Length: 159
Image (cartoon, rainbow, N blue to C red; front, side, top):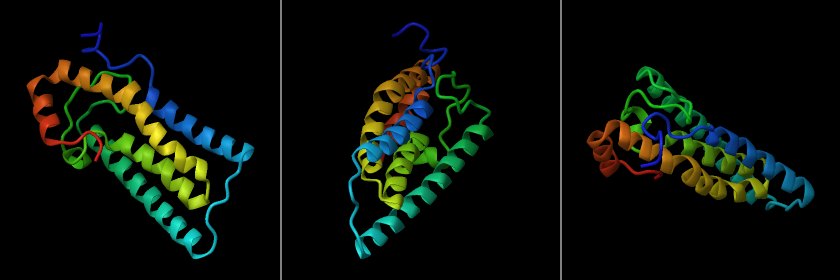
């Protein structure tokens, strides 16, 4: 086990920084090398899908944050958890906020026609998985033991 993993999963809050980085990268790359999204009806359909993803993401994030608040545990990804939250959106998925981050980037890209943002979404998911989720899972196992292992067995990491 890594030193201090029971106390906190990370010393740096990777997920919000990675979200901002993915958004910034998507906009910067689009500015340097713009790719044209589809036109006409396809563009409208993609924009509607993007708007639905963004709205769903906001709802998912808010309900997950409220569940964390009700449990009186931190929302900060680099702080130690005081409670194992398994209600609200956490009943279906272990990382609803991170899934929301990925869908937000993809949805915004579809909504505004930024192909690079759509491309950044899966990259964001992979990097969050490696830099945050793996350590958070080790932290939660160390802190909550069998209760967390049982939760992992019945609840998917992503979708």
